[in-house]
Picture 1 (cartoon, helix red, strand yellow):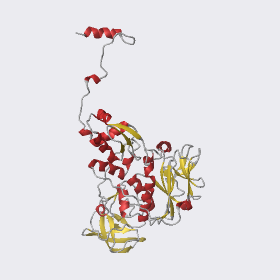
Picture 2: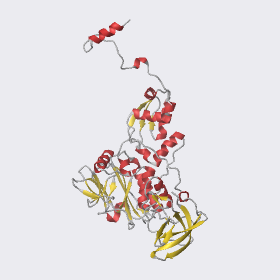
Picture 3: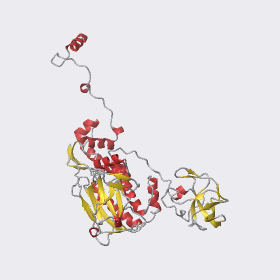
Picture 4: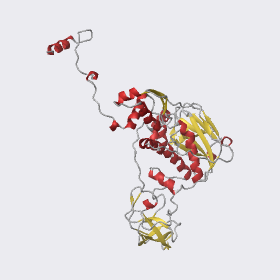
Length: 468
């Protein structure tokens, strides 16, 4: 990257351009001058400096240039030029204690270790920090500690400020709406840094919180500007053939009758459920009230609509695999907790929670004998239990046959063989000894025939001729 910390020594007007300034900076014992168009730079400021030869996000390589007769040896950088957000109005200011010449990646914490995981389609729980932590905790035999969100509620109850109506509960078994007063602005550096490291672009504190919870808890969220919702309120319904909506990417999309919509109380489409919001109620700098959506949508419906529209998002990638229906309200509460921290939010009491069609957890018969038969192991009953319980599987009963209740965040656990696979994963495939099948179990070889109906007498004679 090549961007370093610089201290501003002097700022003077550009002699040939009223809107430009000449800024002298010191970086690691050296001084140089750049031409700058921002007006938020003063002597003593500590800022990011990209010298000639530095490469910015997007692949832009800087060169020494002459601008209106003055040589600019590189540039001072805004948050957007560093890929840390959308702010392009002014130069990013760094901690005044930062040493001139230091690598900006170290100062901003952008040199952290990032794990790039290849998650299989059947493991939506692993598309979150908590999900990965759960597996690691089980592997290292340490307890998993996920803090319970704490929300300070105040003001009028949610039901007096917005309404909720779910007309398609078979496609949306659970929908949670929370209302909050917020103060939009840039996210704090720690949040912007973590989102950037995870590959997401920081936008604003309100929007960034929804993305942060998606990555942390695996619960997709969407924030609507409450003042832009007719009613005000939410209606979850199926689309009408030919109905249209302009999504956040400024594309008008034509819908079919099996597409699920999030509408306002006046039936105006505001989002393609689980995939992308619309432009009408988009959160902006003028937003003062939001309605926060957290939901569980059935995976097949989201997958069909996403594929037909050719529209995929971080949300749809999780919904079409299956999010945790029991974690919807917790996800909304976690977002509210963060909004109170980074957006001065005042959260209305009593979330609206429509959960009429509850998603039942599968109850699966599990036999230790079957586990050992499939894996070629000699595990005891207690070994099987100890392998599954750290993964969130509730084991009912004792002995060689028990009932295992799959956790709500693991939609891939449906049959006994699925649990056997989990036991194998926990024991470790390298720890399972290799065994050879018994000769009597071998299939596919020649065998004698008796000439009965359905047999080939010619083959029988040839076999008989080869006998000693």
